[in-house]
Amino acid sequence: MRWWIRPFVRTIAALLLPLIVPFVITMILWALPGDPVEIVCPPQICTGGAHLAKLRRLDHGPWFFYHHWVWDAFHLNFGTSWRVVQGFPVSGLMAEAIPATTILVLFAMVPVLLGSAVAAVGWAPKRTDPILQTLGLIPAVILALIFAAWVTITYGALSNEGWPGTLRLILGALTLGVTDSALSGAVIGTRSVFDAEIKQRYIGIAILRGETVLANALPNVLPALVGQVRGRLLHLMSGAVVVEVVLGISGLGSLLWEGTLKQDFGVVLAAAWAFAMLSSVLLLIQAAVEVGTAMYIRRSPAVPA
Amino acid sequence: MRKGGTARMVWLVIALVMLGGLIVASYLAPEFLTRPDLAHRNAGPLVVPPFGTDSMGIPLMEYALQGAKVVAIPSVLSGLLVSFLAILAGLARCMGFRWIDNALAMFQELVGALPRLVVILVVAVAMPRDYRSLLPIGLTWAFLAAPAAMDEAAATAGRLGGAAFVEALRAHGFNAFRIYLYHITWLNLRSVIVRQGAEVIMQVVFLEISLSYLALAQQLPALTHSDSVNSWASLLYDGYTWLVAGERMRHAMLLGILLVAMTALMAQAFRMAARER
Image 1 (cartoon, rainbow over the protein chains, first blue to last red):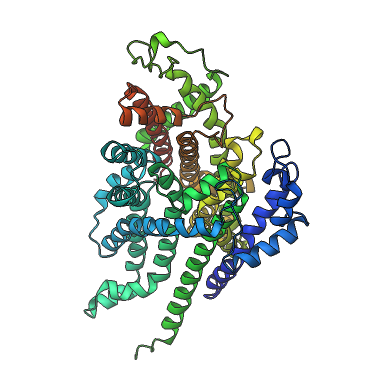
Image 2 (image 1 turned 135 degrees about the vertical axis):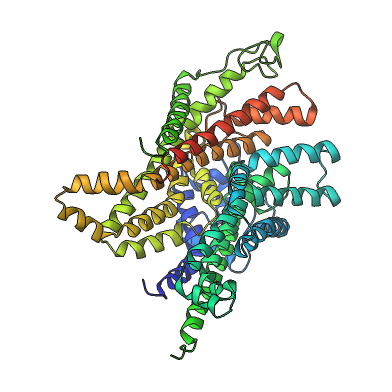
């Protein structure tokens, strides 16, 4: 496969994602039994459906709704919530939720990145793998509920501000970073990438020349490592939904969960679009690293005979 | 027997017994829970064997059986779907379809670019309330997990030599059935497809527990089953009341964790039984 195909595919995927995700959700909204207006305003309990349909642009078919929604979304206007906090601007809900999820995922990246770094320099012996793998088998929901119980007993059920709130974030990050094979995957994945590269002949020559293995191998394994980090970030964002709800963290995941349970398409569209935008950024970063590494390797001077 | 053959056989027996137990339990599950028996509320396993009762005096055994009914068929079908797609990718590499690499890369980028649970929730929001089931959610999860499994199977087949391996076997006079199903799939791809399939079975069970627990925690209807059926998450939720409020429900927590551990053990047993020689 030519070197530019993968970054090219990633760039295309990154550009398409923020358009495809709302398109699919819009199609789902129209594919559901009944009229979309009836979801916003069930006729048994609600009057003024026509007015709400006009307000939410549901009265001119899916394409009209979709292209207006996407246009508004790129201007950070997501309309109002249908059910979660009825009538409240979704952008306001998102503004409250995104910082908590960002902090949670960044904290959770700490053990994952530390594990990767330790594996990269060869400080993680293989005999620790069974312990890490066993730890990774614990589902996030189990550890999260144990931590939630502990915080609730110690600080009370409504302790979401101040230190208890921070503690919930730290424990949530620990749960995300360790369970569901996050840490074991980081250690074993990074080590396997380096192990495969170290077997290459140029590494042996570099050692004979007195150079370090890491300095020689790193440029060549960088795209694979960035790919792994992207995969782990996606994994953490996925797990954040469970951890946020169980530990009572008001983040993007818990907002999406509440929107799903209450069939609030205003919230689901916005939260899924935010996740799609984050995924797009990660894809573009990976593509840029791949292109940069390929250019660097091609620009390197030929070794004189 | 080859070296390690006995250990593999033991793991295989463990895996099959646990999988069989899960499927049998799903068939033994009662359609509705028995009536509450307040005389035996929060009874331990010694008072009401084998697992005790909940706060309404309903045996936890019924919850365990109903939970098995919720997860058994959807999780096994999801695992089979991933294994099937992995076999297809491995065979395509051996048939010399080079375009499959580019198609797989595109598929992986688009399908794997979003957090899986976000996609699952989007699927869940599309399900009408009366038709909620784990099956569409499990199959979606399998579809999202498939690119990694397909990539690994294709890489394994590539290491065999791809089309050159098939050509060599043809030169030995083997027919296509023996080459593709026995030599490639059974002898060489088996460890990958069994491990990936077993992992997806485990992940789908854990996914169901997570989604049901989240719904229970907010006192809302579950996304994965009807209101008349209970998930294994109910046991964990009862266990949570023991942790927080000191209700006498420790046995529910232990049973919930035991079922989770058995699911993880089943996946590990399959992996160990099919590991490479």
